[in-house]
Image 1 (cartoon, rainbow, N blue to C red):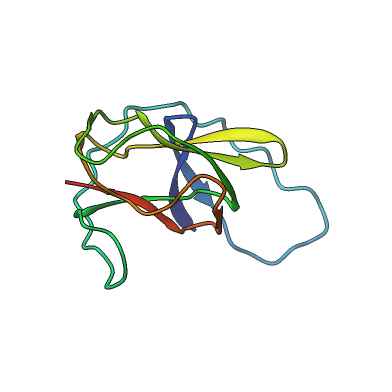
Image 2: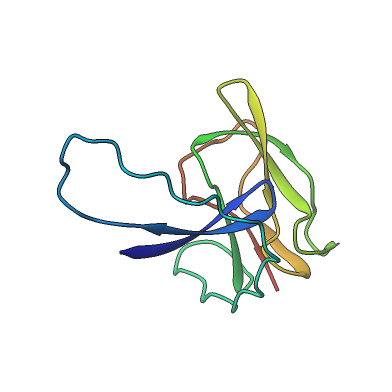
Length: 123
């Protein structure tokens, strides 16, 4: 079994995925995960390319940068929108994982981004 933590619209869910051979029969329904408070993430070390801060704000899905909500030097709280992505005609807010100050914005409106792409950094 593997444990994953998934954030959807600012709600954090712990998900357990069981690995095994498929029998063709549907898997038993897992109990629904209840939202819980987001844990304080330890600051991640920035990758060699891009970013001035120690906390990375990354795209959760591929899309196009629709709007940049925050600016460099702005204080943000966990859950505040930093960048808005557009994918399949939906606006998807990418939020700050923890409280901090925006150290860099690494994208511009209209830029195409892949899932996991660095959008901004926080200190």
